[in-house]
Length: 296
Image: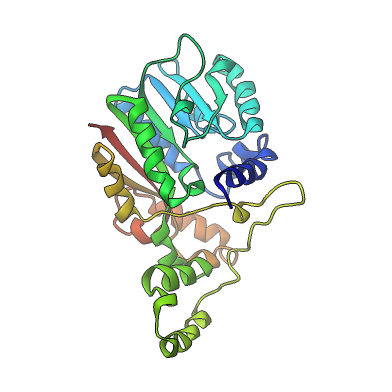
């Protein structure tokens, strides 16, 4: 699939979500509690950030939870329907609609609105829900774009899905990680590959269910949706010009996710009690993480 086709698929995936996305992912009834928003808020406060760009802002989801009178928010998103919703929500927080615009994180020109009062650089940049939809070779481009758009000493906060979490889930993600990242199954001798096929018996490859879309829109698992290894993404941050990089884990799972339907209340209580962004077990038991760093 070409780059343009991938972008069209992502737009299709999110177009019908614009009105419900916030409630589905960050509202009171969301599957996961938005503990990472508090982490981001603490980082912004510690760095005295005033002008803040939200890359992939969606329907102004983060801005609704982080907005304060001392902060000046801007945001862009790939999906026009998301921007329309963000502009509507922005009026409730006295944010002018021109501070939300359509843009692509891979395009360096997308990082500023076409208005005379646009800041020359930002105190901070938030990037949530974007990295999963990038091809591997595009990650450096986006990190460079954010580095160039933030001021010297400014902070960039990027959220990613944790690839190492698949070592704990015992599902189809685990199977893919074992075969493709650890064992490199396709490069094994034929006899060894045949024996190792028995590993399939040890994973619930039917879980989690594939998220398939409709005739009118793509499902999440039908578009580029990558996870990232915190052990390798952190050096990428360093290589493009960030320093004082912090790694914070969130959305801990006290048990493998397959047990949640059997013990829903216990699962959530135990998992929420485990939330500690610096717990080393987050490398394997947290489904997501934040990387934050200052521009050198």
